[in-house]
Length: 195
Image 1 (cartoon, helix red, strand yellow):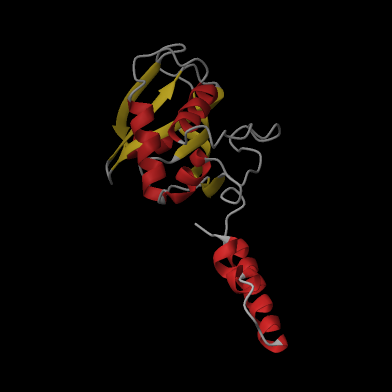
Image 2: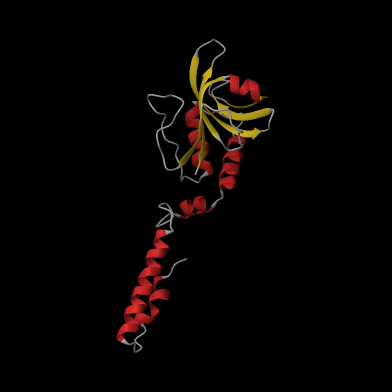
């Protein structure tokens, strides 16, 4: 952790310093302070312990926390799909990240947020556990509906998602389907990762 007095100690030590040495020490101290502040993320400067903890996780660590939290809720009441995913991310990030609302004009996309990274839109990509999909899905009735889900497992041939309000109303379920069946069930999709 940065300690201002460590770098500024020569300035306050009361010892004798030549005028030019004093200027160099002041300049060096301020340069170190500015350099330190420049490398801090916006959340980590003055951040709570939860924010620092979340920022210190690797991307894989964040994804794993999301998968673990989602899997722990299978069978529970989840409510609407997006609200369920928002709560999973909020818990997995220890209250640091709350997912943005859906774009009102494009139901398979979210509003912009510095907490999420858009991986792809309307592209069949290699999915990874921890990815979150905002999609427009084909219903068995033939209609279309927005839907939010979390990828918990993915291979070249199969994908497993945890979601709420899809196969059972307001209930958190896990479903595994072939990768082709999965992509064919989506009309539009945006894939996100939590930062």
